[in-house]
Amino acid sequence: MTITTKIEKPSASNAGTAGAHFDVVVVGAGSGGIAITAGLLKRKPQLKIALIDPSEVHCYQPGWTMVGGGIFDNDTTKRSMQSVIPAGANWIKDAVETFVPQENKLLLSEKGAVYYDQLIVAAGLKLNWAAVEGLPETLGKNGVTSNYQYDLAPYTWELVRSLKDGKALFTQPPMPIKCAGAPQKALYLSADHWHKNGSLDDIQVHFYNAGAVLFGVQDYVPALSSYMEKYHAGLHFGHNLVRIDGNARKAWFSAKAEDGSEHLVESDFDMIHVCPPQCAPDFIRSSPLADEAGWVDVDSATLRHKRFSNIWGLGDVTNTPNAKTAAAVRKQVPVVAENLCSVLDGDEPVVAYDGYGSCPLTVERGKIVLAEFGYGGKLLPTFPKWLNDGTKATSLAWALKAKFLPEFYWQGMLKGREWLTSPDSLKTPDAESKQKESVSP
Image (cartoon, rainbow, N blue to C red; front, side, top):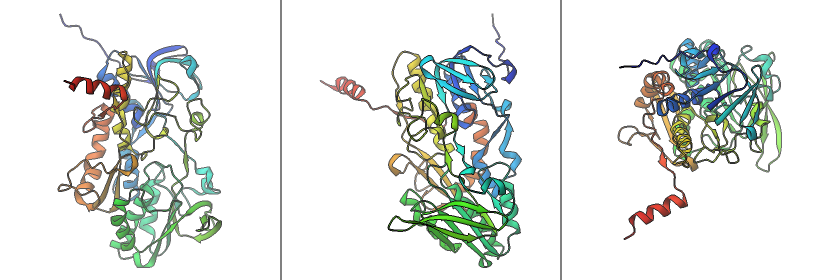
């Protein structure tokens, strides 16, 4: 006899109510939250999992750079949240107010308390627009734009197409930020358009970077520098955007001199692409889960919380010293899934995250420098060098970014398909001791 079990399509209406208890609670339904929920349900379909997020939409954020470059249509980067919640999960459409880890409890804005056996925090980060004086008031007008927000990316492309002469500024704040290459991606695609339509000679392009180098991993700098030279871009390191006046078309930067002193630098602009300062969400920074800087305090290998053994961190919200990218999340998901399942089975974490992150730097339409690296800047290429040399701009990397990755995101990653993500075994003194014993004569 065959017994058929009906799995309800997730919705906010069939989600848990106040006082509900779950095997696993996932905070945040971004790329990490959706992917880990799908991955856990593939491994242990019987798990009772709650996914907490107030948003009604889910966005493919890596696509916004391409929208700002006139390559993707903005609508293709957004779907309803309900359509991506994994079947079998309980979606609680609410926001977390407080964590009470000593009681395995969350307090929600509207639906009261929710209890858990295991908690995964995948809450992303906060775009702190207000950290730049005058920025919130002028975003989306007066030539002020950003590919870091869904409704602003089309405005970037509008500005790029309409600019025939003048000055275009691109800014990058202090780290950490998500997708550290995104500020210069916007510059490259914009300048490439101006180069190809013959207007680049009449446009002054400037990159204002709060950091000291063009890119954090030196191996990729030569290729990127060659494109900055191609586009005649002025490079201003140690310059952090602190104020903007959209009506006057002026921006001010705090500039660091070699002796450590700071002074204000003023620049006018016809167009400015701003990457906002970023920090952990307020409800994370004020919680007992946070480190001194406000990020979820996890072990960089196991992604398990350093003080609460039944709490895990995933994605941008953690304090792991890796690049905050969707590719990093994709590699972290099986680590959290395998380790959490091992703990549920009564064992200890078994696999480790190596810090992998990827940044496809769109240096021109049709070519990408595919930066892939882990902790300490160690190169971790997916492909052999003869197939794709990540330190050079290649057409293959562009095809991967423009054609394969968007579809894989929706139909692969968010469905729990963990292709090319097998994590390394966790190296612990106990594990190494057991391995030596097993090979001893």
